[in-house]
Image (cartoon, rainbow, N blue to C red; front, side, top):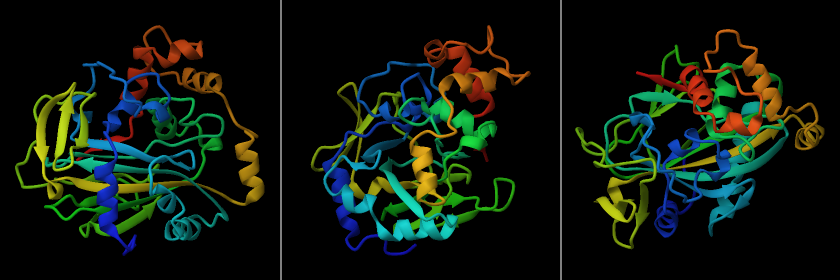
Length: 316
């Protein structure tokens, strides 16, 4: 997709005017619902795998079909994205749900590809943490209630490198590299399709020292600042920070299908999620899969067992 917006510099301006931006790994560390990852509350956790800690930060511009920053309404209802979703899936009901940006400071390649956080009938970003949703998707134990989600990833970056690699035919097949990262986009089912951010900035660049799960990225009117507990760890100029913008929409066969899903017809609850995982004989959870939902969501042993087996990441 070329020429995503008529004024691409306005996207950069929106990014500078909003924030602060949070680390996406916050979706994967505790029992909070995925939609609460950017709530600004310090998590204070040191047990987060190093490869998940930066240097990429996220900001939500539209959530649950509602724009939350000025200017995001037009992006949420982008006709090009909608048309691509219809063409790709054959569905007739497209319901835009999310617009968010990822901002990456200079660094080496992530070294891994990943799939996105899916949603299911009855279990979604409003009532389940990201790590649980990701395990549900990767395990393929919940395909009967999976919701089709189409993602458009677009870029507004004039700096060095920052290319996008993706595997449209599956992770064990060949990959494609998207190198034109200024006002272009790729539309796909990123809940299934592995994708990866390549190195950003000069070769040999490394992330700032001292990053934690609570480190934020913000713009002070002149430069981008990497900040942790009010301590500035690093600063960057405009062209050094790679910006991607993602649009996500749920797609339904027809209006009746949409009505059924939104009413929860045929859906499941979190108790059923626990039951299906408990039925996996070789899932090694200390003490077994918790029966109580509230306890399960804050059980680090349960979370670690699921994320260790069904995490959506693949190295190389």
